[in-house]
Amino acid sequence: MTRRISLTQYLIEQQREHGQIPQELRLLIEVVARACKRISISVTKGALGEVLGTAGSENVQGEIQKKLDIIANEVLIEANEWGGHLAAMASEEMEGIHVVPNRYPQGEYLLMFDPLDGSSNIDVNVSIGTIFSVLKKAEGGKGVSEDDFLQPGTAQAAAGYCVYGPQTTLVLTFGQGVAMFTLDREQGSFVLTSEGVKIPEDTKEFAINMSNMRHWDAPVSRYIDEALAGSTGPRGKDFNMRWIASMVADVHRILTRGGVFLYPWDKREPNKAGKLRLMYEANPMAFLVEQAGGAATNARQRIMDLQPTQLHERVAVVLGSKKEVERVTAYHLEAGKK
Ligand code: AHM
Ligand code: MG
Image 1 (spheres, rainbow, N blue to C red):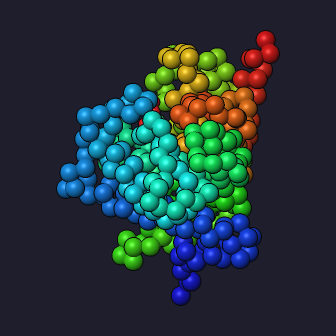
Image 2 (cartoon, rainbow, N blue to C red):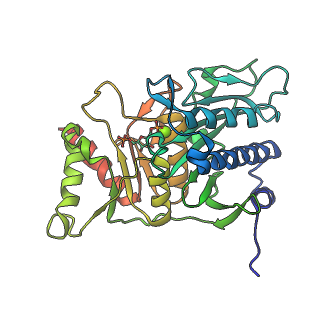
Image 3 (cartoon, protein in one colour):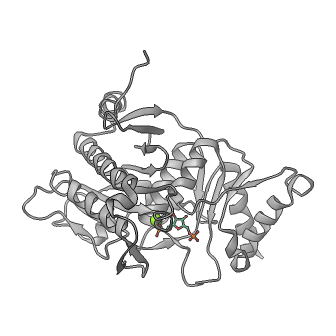
């Protein structure tokens, strides 16, 4: 019989081998995983759980909140605030940070999340997910403030996501590669199903919202036009396109079989760097993708090197198979020189 390795066992063994997962961090990840299990149960109930539809409110980004956005946010907060491993949390669904209440002990970690990514897919039964990023509060200094969160992606202690699709899969990195865990619904536990995940360097598959084509910048149009030209064009091969509109599901496909994902800056809202958020969407995904041998840039610079200035800061995102990301980035840098 093949040996089944649970999430807990994996975390303990990683600590023994690499000394990378102190007990507080392990507790944090286990609590996040437990919260994801609860979110998965709500997602799976759908209409029967009366969790579909809008909540009648807007988040700080001016987006209509779905009931499940709010439920997932509450599940993550409730699960994480009492364990003593965290100083504070930040979320796509909350304007300010959530400091661990005084009645609980305060830890040194900071947790950021997009509780339910791909909100537009909730009601139509398409894969959605939770994305999270873990930072450590700088030593010294009393209390905790938003400034403590403004650390570049390279400072992440851990990152991951949980995708709620036909299977519920938790994907994690601590900076020593990427591991995937599938939820065994009967046992109620996450079981290691893939380790040392690697994204192929080359790909014939891209993911972009093509309906924004008329708003793109020239280097993005160049890259996509060349791909669309197929085997008789400059790339000499035919490309396939996939766009799930849940970043978590698009990234999961890329970690599984390669590909490139683009959510570039465009002319719709020229003052915004992009649609996606740096701290709790782009940074954790960039960490995972790099750990799997891929690359992630904002079309010019490595995402994880960017110094955030705001909690809800937006960023352009190009990530996935290394050579494709390098190509898109090179097109932008070339255009910038002219
Ligand atoms: P959300 O966090 O409000 O769900 O928004 C982020 C999502 C990403 O998952 C996805 O890549 C993108 O928005 C989809 O955008 P579009 O509506 O342009 O297809
Ligand atoms: Mg999101």
